[in-house]
Each structure stands twice: as structure tokens, then as C-alpha cells.
Length: 200
Image (cartoon, rainbow, N blue to C red; front, side, top):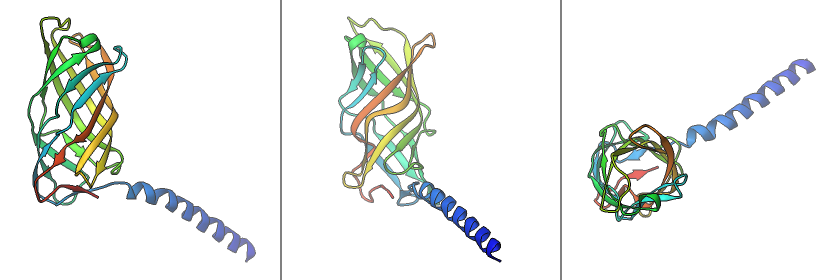
């Protein structure tokens, strides 16, 4: 009888431990709202793409892209980004003297992803073509920026996502050599029109 009770206690303890591990990971996902609404998301802050291995060379844009986005129904951690604009930017470091036109391709495959919670918002399926021009620009051809941008922090106060050296993107030259790239923007995909987009 005592052995049976001990076994039951050990089993109950094991189940409780597994539950404690499982619940936080399930609870970390965040859903976008309001369901089935369309939003115009701006990026009013500057946005900087940095290639650390290229002497911290950057592509700097005075503001980020503007997206049209749709919140899925039923409620989902993914918000579809359906259209956008081209960015006009400049380079520093090894890219100094370059004007960069960034064409954001592949939409509507891009999505804002709250699966990992409000402190690690991701932008899935990033696909950017960067074309460099300029009198003193030593870079030619079309470069690509691709991957899943991670590390975004959602603010319900500003209704925007901030990236500080967000990771997950690669900068690839025309012959296929790739280097990691980070992204910094204090207000990315910001909503300014009611009903405001939310992530909770």
C-alpha cells in the first residue's frame, strides 16, 4: 500500500513538473487583433541595416517601409503583410558613397509573427533586393537581404515594434556570398489609424 502511494506521489510530481514546463511555452504566444481588420502600418523612425563583418557597414533609411496588413481570422499569431513601398537609403563604411534602393519583394508572403510572444516578434519571409548607385559607390549589381528578422519588442503604448540589432537576416552579394545582417528601428510597423492593431 505504501509502495503504491509512493509511486502515485512520484507520478503526480512528474506530471506537475511537465505541466509547469509546458504551460509557459504555450502561454508565450501572442495573437494579433482586432480579428479580420486591415491596417496601414508605417515605420516613422529611421531604420538601419548593419553588416558587422563588413566593418559595421550600414544601409540607413530615414524612415522604414509602409505596409498594408491584414489580421487573420480566426485569431492568429500571424498578421499578413500584403503590400509595401520601396525605400531610398544611403550606405556607410564599405558602402559609403552609395545610394541604395530597397525593393521589398515576395508579398503577401511576409508576416508579423507573435508566436514567440511580445518580446520576440518576428518578421517572416523577408525578401529585399538592394540596388546600389552613386558616383563614389564601389558596389554594383543586385544584393539581397533575406531570412526571418527576430527580436522585435511590441509596445502597446506606441502600437509599434522596436528592433535593436534584430537578427536572422543575411546580406548576399551577386555571386552568392552571404554575411549576417542586423536591423535597428525604434518604431517599426506602427499603427496610427483606429481601430488600432494590437498584440496580446
